[in-house]
Image (cartoon, rainbow, N blue to C red; front, side, top):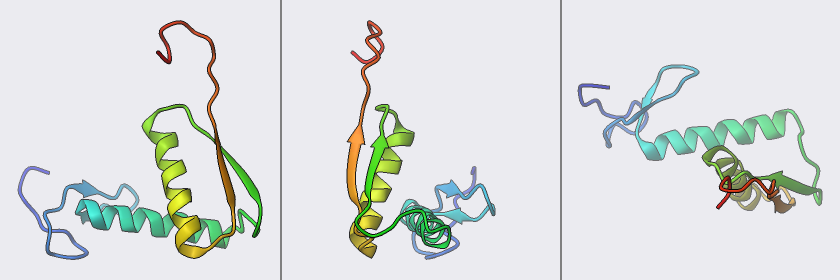
Length: 99
């Protein structure tokens, strides 16, 4: 994004990200809100979880698994999914890989 464009959602902040699915230009705050809404909609529509379920999230230490863990934690608190979240990290024992 070479020229400065305001967020298509709030029209207050400068757009800094483009939603891949639709091409909409959003600021960081609105992008995060839209992403969280998409995840929530998928969880509820597809009935991924049941109240009281234990959910273990595998984390690698990378950004993708960190985002999954963070968003599930936020949505569980916000929408009271009733999930018991745990995370699991595996040390593969490869020298220099996780040091």
